[in-house]
Length: 111
Length: 110
Image 1 (tube, each protein chain N blue to C red):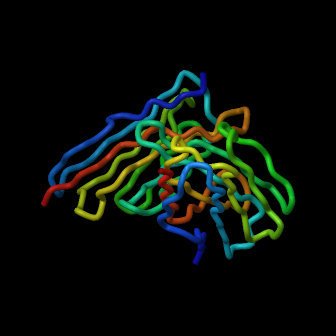
Image 2: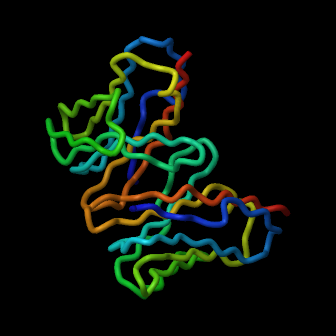
């Protein structure tokens, strides 16, 4: 069965802290994605990756960076967390195209 | 612009009723996807549509890719309590961008 695992379901961080959100998939998928989900705004794409060590900016990359050192792992990094980054973060992967398989989400609160 | 209008925003129905929701846009899309998100979980793909006019079923769920390629519909027949959740449409634009609707929140009462 397809599995996308996000390392933390709930995190609470302070403004200015560095935050790492980890995502691992076990389907040997080429493509991985990071979205954030906010009420009334739907899902917005932060970054995506088509291959190891490759990354592309999505619609809202400001304040975020990513790392893909291995095919199965895609990390989202908040260099200096701010309160407007409080959100639900969803990782997804796909073999081809845009049929995304999502993880369970990481709910981040920045105080 | 590339926006998806999903309606209704929320629905409160009784178990056994049928449900209809839709997504519309002023832009043309090449693919339509429908996802369901259970509370506290990530979205799960329900149905994918690739051709204008296509009608696809998945159990009690039926979705259609509108002929104009600017809309899509999802119907749920004979709703049950586990249908509760948020349903999202997503359209793949010709620019290769996947745009998500803002979701329809479904509540089913026994």
